[in-house]
Image (tube, rainbow, N blue to C red; front, side, top):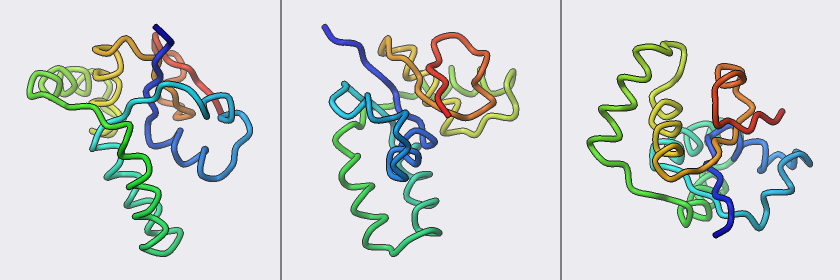
Length: 120
């Protein structure tokens, strides 16, 4: 089985912007949550047309995995200990752990956490 990577919103934004450090993930097994896609869509709509933003969001929807109520509860426990994290980040980190995926981000709040592939 190949390695699985969880892309947080930061990773998607850097991919869209063409950051060469993210090129190695082009053919990787990627997962994400609906929370990250919501955050991505919002950020993109501030930077580009609605059509382009919605297009990227649609393209990345193939990477979606289910988020359960247990995931939410565990993520909010995690967030109470890591208050700077956004809800999408906390949920994503917990879902990544559940799937045995490396959490890929350049978000400084994750720099020293385990199971994180920190890329800027």
